[in-house]
Image 1 (cartoon, one colour):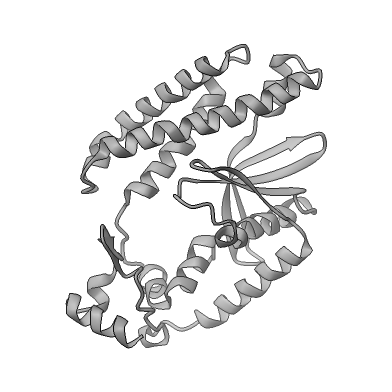
Image 2 (tube, rainbow, N blue to C red):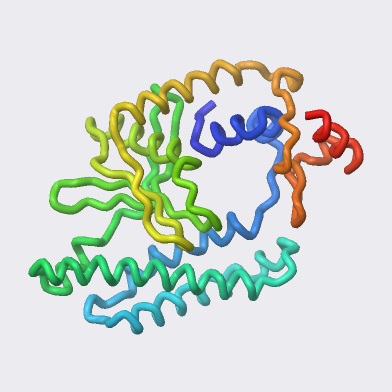
Length: 269
């Protein structure tokens, strides 16, 4: 098995969910949050293909929103099958997310101009590598880095997040995995790590050998615990992540006969 942040995080969340997803390989239902994340990544990728360095902030925002609408409409039929009540709410929220990222990028570009670069050069200095895949057969680990920024000899790995909170600690392992994979490929750690929360802005993650060692330890622990193919070796974690006000785990019906059984198991802890 090739592990990833998603599989490791799934095991930590619930071993039984890991079993159904990665051992039995049962299908998982698409969600509005997952699909919107892919759309946002696509918007940023297309922004760098379409934007002109001489655009002002309003023009860049206009471009960003138009790219979002185009990407959204391309997937609209698929989005309508997800069963979310009000798709327009998510679209309007996504427009604000695009605005926040564009504002961040424009301010970064302006800082480059203030440092003496012409606008075209400033734009190119900030152009990232997007959606870069890494895989280590030695570690049995893979990951796709949303954005790699290289400037003045320094490398920064970035992951984009559409989540409503800005819990950096929740994703420290993910940046650590990316840093480790980058090191395996290039022989050195990236200089910086960051999470760009579309609702909150950019948050730094310290990248150092301690982070990498934490990743290696976590990876080995999960590998050791996931050697079995027997379902009973993967206990259920009965929490509010099994069922919530607007949905439920993809495998809820595999774990519980009904809501009453779920409530009873959750109460027992």
